[in-house]
Length: 198
Image 1 (cartoon, helix red, strand yellow):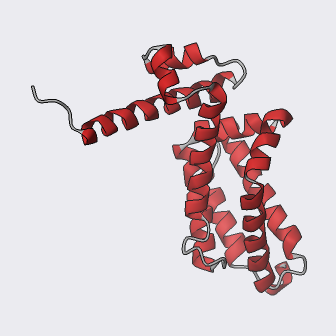
Image 2: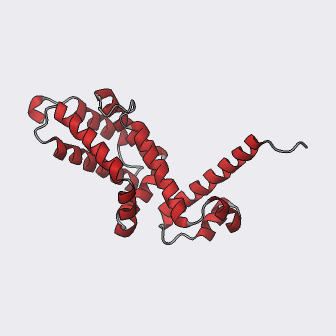
């Protein structure tokens, strides 16, 4: 049997890292961050606690890696050409993909909302991503301004609250929530408005 190549070792390492992250996300989302121990994550991932520490030095580092992946996904869906201007097609894509990830990453959003209700934890995340949040809000505000809204900043904040509300309701009852119909309603509401609806 020939020795493994560097690429094979890298693949094994990435695969193991993903397994740890998936295990941690499942436990954080369903048991809570504080109630989940490193030992329970290692047990779920079917690896030793020592091996887990080779990948992540603490539970907090694991949490930040999970949250970073979700934020990166958000960035990838928003202003896709990165020109600082949101077009109608980019806005539609952002709505579609944001709601699609509710299905594919339900545990992530369950964790997000659980953290949002823990001010000490959530304040750390808000501080880390403050510049990103501010720049996203500014781009959204400019989009609504160009659409003729009288108060574009308020509309940008309302859109964020609207999407959070949809996401929270889906996470609480995914089997009975009419996500496809809601998605169509959101797109129609924001991309096909009459002047008197502003």
